[in-house]
Length: 342
Image (tube, rainbow, N blue to C red):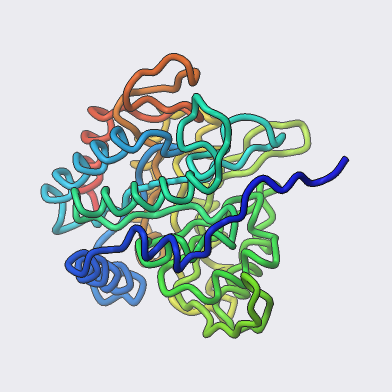
């Protein structure tokens, strides 16, 4: 019972020097970041979607998917801003199973985190180059952020990480919006406390340094439903839920209050096909209440090239090897319908 030290991990500077972000793409990302911030600041009236597969397991499939999103973005650009989900870490409730590309750049081979770090950075750079859309990733491991922070336009903190001190403090140093999910228990105070922590300055230990952060004013809420003590899924996307969360949000000293609704997970009862119905219900709630229209600025959607999910050894291109996702045709139809009702 001990640690076996397999190999040293290269530092972020070494990886970023080896796989640089080209100068022209830096400008693309900076422009996109300004547009996303403008939504939070209420300077532009656009809705945003954080959309993509449960986990990014194959670079070619991921880049094809994001390039399709770029075409869809051109269709709906006046009303919707699309942020691709390129999730390179996969949280596992029991610790078992595929943990994402950062662990296994090839799902058929043994874990190799050094190769995984290189693979996820290469994939993010390629996806941005081919699509012009900077992506979102989930921050499962705060120490991984420097390997990708120049590439990401959005970061999510998951339901099982949102109570963790290091996640909250790391968010406080980010320059892009960070969504804090409500925990699986459904305790909204946990989510709001994490937003408060993310919006304020802190001094702490980070990647071998004593650091001080500025606070991230774009830290905000993601509603993903909850699970009760009997394992039953409890949604929190209905009109009354949204009003209750909005009122509590407004009662707290938080800036740029924004709610994103996760249309899958416990909100859908893990039935991925329910996502379009849930999304349209949220849009109807926004149309009914000016308060909700002001607060609810985005949806999070799980989608890939091929509907459903598969076992790792099935090898269907563009089909999730973790949680099931909407297929492309259903996704494109859903996004177009959303654009009509924003």
